[in-house]
Amino acid sequence: MREVRKPALAALLVAAALGVGACGEDDSGRPATDAERGSTEGAKKAPSIDQARDATGDVTFCAGKDTSGGYTHAVERFNERYADQGLSAELLEFPEGSDAQRQQTVQRLEARSPECDVYQADVIWIAELAQQHWALDLSDYVATRGDEFIPSTLAPNKYDGRYWAVPQVTGAGLLYRRTDQVGEPPATWQELYRQAAAHDGMSYQGGAYEGLTCNFLEIAYAAGGEVLSEDGKSSAFDSPENLDALKFMVDGVESGAAPRGVTTYMEEPARRAFENGRVSFMRNWSYAYALNQKAPTVRNKFEVTPLPEWEGGGRGGILGGNGPFLSVYSKNPEGGLLFIDHLTSPETLEENMAKYSLPSVLEASYDEPSVQKAVPYAAELKRAIEQASPRPVSPVYPRISQAIYENVNQALSGELSPEDAIKRADQQIDEALATF
Image (cartoon, rainbow, N blue to C red):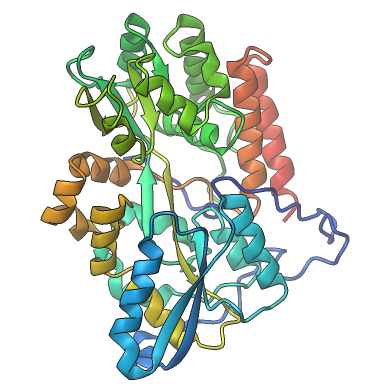
């Protein structure tokens, strides 16, 4: 499996750019702090489990809207477990949506608010949190549990050699295939596109947003491409491998392997195209499985497999996911650590996957009968997660991603040649990297 190099780890799935200025000020005009200039030296460490074991008091867990009910139940179980100890937690829900969650998180951290002890973070926030000295260093805690996690899920939570959050929910792109049209899963991307062109095509996330960054990098990584140099200080985007991947995707739209409308698709339009029988294949996340099983057109007529190999190359995949971090402004870091330990425990993550369809980050979860019954494709999902890699981890990741998805989308739409799109993205990535 292709390993992503360690420049600096990933930022947000749908975030706005940080905009740190190149000459000592950010776009708001205030002086840049030492943290914004790239130092994580002097970061505070989280307490150890032994130090936290007898914690008392209150813990506030701040997260996005609890649409599944998983957070609420985890808090209830935590309070039952620690009631006799005098320790309790409450859930503070932020408005729904990644942008709103990030905005609420950043506002509190910039204000040095102690309101939230533990925050739920998208994996693409990690470098920013570390650079700003907003998260306690959780490396010692992670080291006590390192062998429990699927190795790939740890990588997005690590920046500058340390862990700033703990994996809790993960995800990777999957290939959905109409079994009444195509018997065996294609072994390579090239075979997939040939089969798609011969049948009803393939839907994926081709709109100009974060989803397209994921879709492009899945193919580019499999082809051997990179985004950043090994030290993370310069772009490595202008490469033959990335150009081959983009030409391949552009040819796919032109040949009919993917419908021209794919250049506007996000997750749901791609899913609806598959659900309604308009395409034979779909690239999407695991959430689409249960919804497609409710659709009469495709119910019990599709299978899920990991993404294929690149012919003559390897496999690629992009990790999604999120997990808790401990605020440097917490007034109860010991209680906060015990809550993180509970939120990421085998019991909680098994329940999250079996009851709420939230993919676990733990190896053992996928062997549990309750999980295998609730998620029939658990083995395929685990393989997809194992072969996936984080997006580039950088404090300016949102701007890096924007450079990728805007230029790739213009190439898919015929507004730019693949060569010009790659070169322009490469230049914009270097411009973003020069701001920190």
